[in-house]
Length: 212
Ligand SMILES: CC(C)(COP(=O)(O)OP(=O)(O)OC[C@H]1O[C@@H](n2cnc3c(N)ncnc32)[C@H](O)[C@@H]1OP(=O)(O)O)[C@@H](O)C(=O)NCCC(=O)NCCS
Image (cartoon, rainbow, N blue to C red; front, side, top):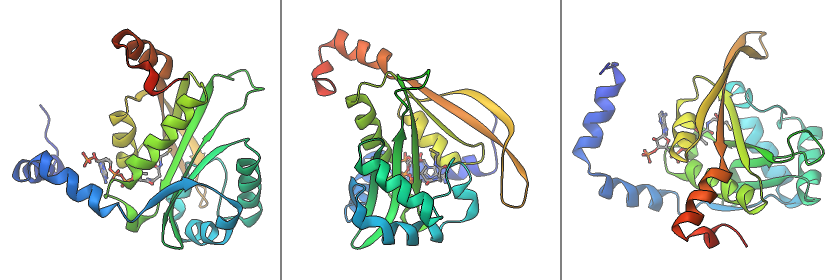
């Protein structure tokens, strides 16, 4: 087994605190955060959130949501039912957002792309996982058979969240995205065959949890 400098530290911390003790603390911390559908009234708070993000976090998003025009178009699309979008709200502030992008007229009508983004102050409390799980459930309810997510290879937290949900790395695209300074970054594409999971749930007789 290969050991990195940071891995043993994480292992030692985890060994000190049993998982059963860590989990409730995390969910308690994230309790003040409500996860709900994106609505027109969120425009101002969402713009403030987007503008508070470091450029690198916006990098993996195909659309720059810190641009008011782009944000308005996203809200319109979500309200019209064209995109499934959720926000994580703490009081009046938006601390995270996510969506399932899906084009029924494309050659992949059965595929949705899951995008999720959390502000730095809201991370590490279980909110990202909750938001991702809720988006995943929406995609399954909408009948999508396959879900993909793409991110720069250094987004280790994102990769951990997605792998925990059963996503697997399927491809790496070298130098595929450029940041504002013109530097190129590799991205990884993770995929999840929802249909396989549903077939397994059906075999165990628990499919009613996710389908009509
Ligand atoms: C991905 C993201 C939403 C995760 O949000 P989060 O609230 O910090 O994640 P959670 O607190 O729910 O943690 C979930 C798991 O991720 C892992 N994790 C969290 N932070 C981590 C880090 N910095 N490094 C490695 N793993 C990490 C942990 O395994 C954790 O599981 P645990 O409960 O067993 O400890 C957030 O990091 C983010 O917005 N990243 C930038 C945007 C991005 O890359 N999005 C993905 C593209 S779709």
